[in-house]
View 1 (cartoon, rainbow over the protein chains, first blue to last red):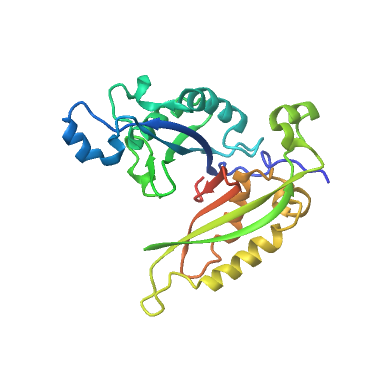
View 2: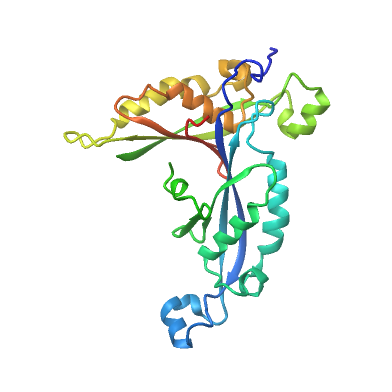
Length: 157
Length: 136
């Protein structure tokens, strides 16, 4: 069966879709801020303030949005996205202690802050527009960030 | 307004190929997905509809009715089929996850009584999925 693709079949604008990819990494952290006393840290962070740290298997879901390219049927090249994630996410954070990394030198290594950092990283992905980053810290806790001006997206509209 | 999501699964074969390109170009862009013998996935479909809760039934939509619509419009057409060869929209559209989401939207839009289609999400694998909200 032969076919031609719809780049010539329709003059309506390309549908805009969102592609999401999940990556997994394992890292340790400790929730602690120098702005609080030792006692205040214990109250604020509970067992997450354990001086020796603890760890998680993080699931990081990155969502990119854009027109579906009529030639490829894709929002973005998955191979390019995976290579970007390998270099800028997995090679930097997997099997690390987050508190020792420069990204968390001046902010607490909460998953809220980690989510914002991953959003900052993927904002630089050159082939599609970042829409949202969602991180599951455990199967019970997840965090989402859609950038500074995106209440609309956060509501899933 | 309340959002309601129904899941369904289908298993299909596909490959990625653009006839306007040479074989080498298809291999370069699509890699293993360009194997003309096809490969397959267990897809998971999530259809989200939005509507007001009926004060008498307490439903946004009758889930059985929604299940039957998904079955008739999507599952019977896609499940255990070769998408490129047996599903008409993919004669002119590469069956990527994005295009499957768009195509399912087009199949369902306007067919669900008393509710508005809100989102179509298609998982090709647990770690890869596409969302379509009807935007152009």
